[in-house]
Length: 75
Length: 353
Image (tube, rainbow over all chains, first blue to last red):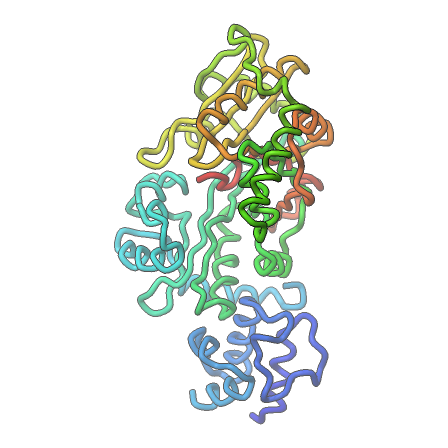
């Protein structure tokens, strides 16, 4: 998995977000439309697509998309 | 969640099932720790007897309608569900009101809130929510809740200083005092008859038990979707719950007009009212104003469900809040139709409890 593919998958979890508007340094909890359900959809996507179990605690601790990407890689 | 497949929703439901459990005696210690963080000043929200009453459980040891979400061993969020029956077009449905929704600040937007909502949706055919926060409202829309038009909150000021401070919090003490004197003078002059004691012989004072039949009769022909206020509901909702709540009180007339009201430490709430004519409306409201002023309450609060009710209450001196309440409803049953409006009273949902 590379970060660009992950960002594309990540963007798809939002109802409305323009493709390309999120980059590795984006603080994902500040993206318009991020909420509790988006968090769960990201956890589900990571599980389905990458076969890894991301926890709510990881979401809580990570700030940027890059942090999240690193966290998934470490699992 | 229109853009996601059903199977995805089913997967989230499975996650919810693994992390969310109803309140039980075994979880009570962790729940108390959660409440101490979420609502530091609330005793009743950690009292299992009170919670058992509020969420209509048969036992305080296992409260099925209080869902707790866990991170490891700790409770990090909760959602309460108050069972009710909803009637529309002569059909009565089993329903539930979502309330006391809370996820600890440090866990907000990490997924637990949506899981609580998802887990709750299967428990009854209809799930309702009233006036959610903006954040919660957006989530509800994503989960397929639809918006129904609710009532308008109406208030009659008794402690004018309280209202001035609410509207103009930066005003100096002197300015608040001066403004209060002028508004109070206006009210006393404009509505001076309201402050006179009405003829006692025309009004009976009692509890909710005295007007159960009147309440049921007054709601027989309601056109909008509404919570069924039958005997079972009223005996639950209006009873005393020591040491937290007194019995709900009533004022009524021989002819059948009534006010069902509840005094909290701050305000007087008109839970429900029905007036047969203008005279009875005036004497009952005057009597209630008299009681609330003596108590003393800061204001009378109620809901108006029609323009006619708004007009009548405004004529007495109530003012209406700018926006109407929103009621959100969710159902998976395509045959369930609740129309576009919801007739709501102050004591539906978790108002004052």
